[in-house]
Structure formats: structure tokens, C-alpha cells
Length: 126
Image (tube, rainbow, N blue to C red; front, top):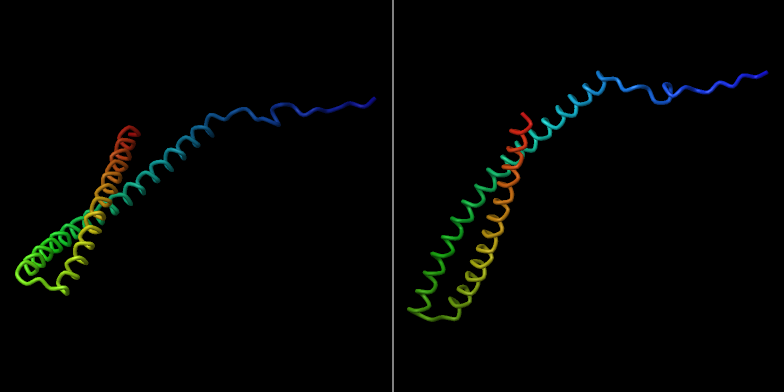
């Protein structure tokens, strides 16, 4: 007579250990806080650099506006093909700078929204 041994369910699927689940929850929470903290730091750094870039772009834009006005005045006083050619170039650069400023402001709004969402997430987590 042979006896057949079947493994019990407990060896295949051990019963859940409440301490193990608690440790998993703590480690998951710690990981989430660490990631959130790291992302917040990165976003604040990016935000600072973006603000510096926006200020720089504003200065560049005002300088281009001033040069454009001066070129327009030169064209009124003494029209010249050479001055007209440079006036067109400045006008094109001015358009590109204005377009870039709009793009930077859009990116800044998005970064601010992400930062706000992360801050709200941290507040709800505590």
C-alpha cells in the first residue's frame, strides 16, 4: 500500500503575515516620500532656472525692441538698403524671441501646476 502525500495549501500559499504587510506599507510610504521629495527639489531647481531664463528673455526682448525703434528711426531719417536689410533681420529675431517667451511662460505655468500638485500630495500624505 502506498501512501500519497499531497502538499498542504499552507506550504504553497503561506498565510499573510501582518508584520510583513506593515513593513511593506512603511517601505512603500518611505519610498513615495523620498521620490516626492526628490521631485519637489528638482522642480524647484528647474523653476528657479526657468525664472532666471524668463528674466533674461525679457531683458533681451526689451533690447531688441529698443534696437528696432532705433533702426526704424534711422530708416525714416536716411533710408538705406543696408539698414533695411538689418531691420528685417532684427524684426525676425524679435518675432522668434517673442515666440520663445510665450513658450517659456507656458512651460513655467505647467511646472507651477506640477509643483502645486506635488505640494498638495505631500500635505495629504501627512
